[in-house]
Length: 267
Image (tube, rainbow, N blue to C red):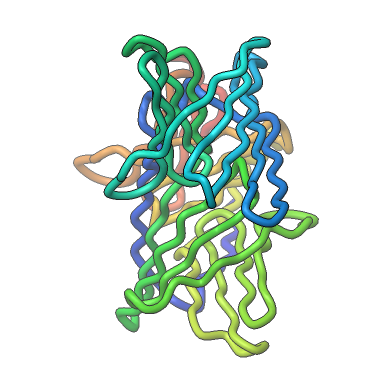
């Protein structure tokens, strides 16, 4: 017996997700970022994934910086940089942009901090494009609608999904479903094309599946158990989804779920 429930997103779209976290970003983390300013002096403290802390004091009027690392105080002179910051002396060199900072001693990196960032591009069927760069370390997001002006947003506490806002804009979403509002009015909306299917067999087993046709994935639940995430594969006919443990195949209203080569559901 098959029961179908169709949940089609208001906008069928194509979403392209690319995480720009390079290998260095994956290996570095910030558990603490603090910044204070007093007249021409700005102080900042960064902590990396190893728990090491770099304390920096920038004197903008004099073009100098004092760095404290592992109990050593290091005085540096400002250098001309194409972008970001650059300070150095005969032995040490400090470079960075935003919260991404590197300290070198005799040419060797002794401290490195990079915020964890993820860049996402959403498209809807109307051709609108929303690019968002999430800074998971700082709890911020930079959004660009159709290549327009940068929209800076701060993270808010959401019951589920994401929520970022400023005085004018609000960005909410869950999974690949995203809404951008301006002054309370929706200016961009993207929802994946999803189909919910419930299949039952003669033994009373129930297989519930949510197919995401946009992302090419399915979430399956056997008898209300754990969520099984599967990726779509190219099938000669019917459907075929799998992960390292499970395989889901089907044609028409007939479905088969296989675990480690053994069939655990069939109708």
